[in-house]
Length: 140
Length: 140
DNA sequence: TCTTGATCCTCTAGTGGCTAGAGATTCTAG
DNA sequence: CTAGAATCTCTAGCCACTAGAGGATCAAGA
Image 1: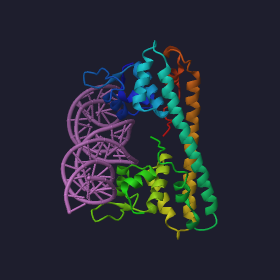
Image 2: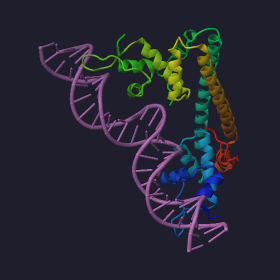
Image 3: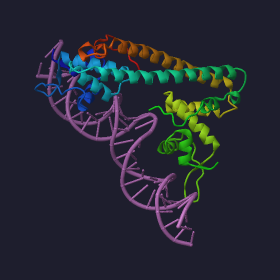
Image 4: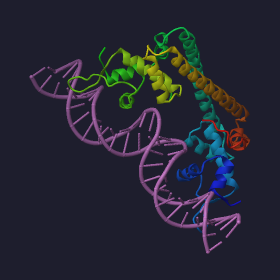
């Protein structure tokens, strides 16, 4: 193996500076270096980075990924925690889909209405602003 | 009306520092001040901030929102332009919904497959690690 | 009228998760 | 041996906020 960082990047789809950044924040371990101080990686890092990339693409935060990685290294532990991380993430995704679908309807209604005149007939602000407001309801 | 910033914040669900930040980046106008230099807001700002908050929650970038706001304030402009902006927003919204739904499917599959037992049987981690896909395919 | 405490002001700096660029060094193919 | 691609460290920038310091102002009660 003994891959230089660029090759690791190519194989995992994680950019070179991002790999160094992940090392810096302790998401991956500092690898051995060559005489000339260049990083060399092995098979394990490919797996770990693929895991990280995929989890990021799914929208998991770095801290969550860190937890998942720790868990994956403790095969004795119960998976309740992993399950609840995934579930709360799913709930968040569901909320977003719901909101986007509401917006979708409003936008297309706007386009329909807009088709016949000037912008003064478009009411995007009202449409989104009046949208059943509940100030205490927040999305993180 | 003549609301102080904290009241505006309470009514819109946008935090006080965020309102000031929005003023700084020109997303909302600088409001009149009291003798003692404190901001006072009217009805229009409530609408505008509610609009901004909803749009942000839906994941639109500030520049995107700026366009929508400008558009809504130019009743003279031809409907043609507004229409095409709105349509491109709609396309964007559709893309987002699509991506989120794919994500949703994957997440719930992950959760279903988790045996609710020990990590070694839990497929959440396995799925994240093994999921094969080409490196060039990214989800924003 | 005075005081008290909540709210407001400006300003700087920090957050997450990268990304970009400078300037120097190292690796590798010919 | 050499050219040029890749690597190194370091600093700074991005977006959209968020936090905190240190001070001023406002509104209500005594």
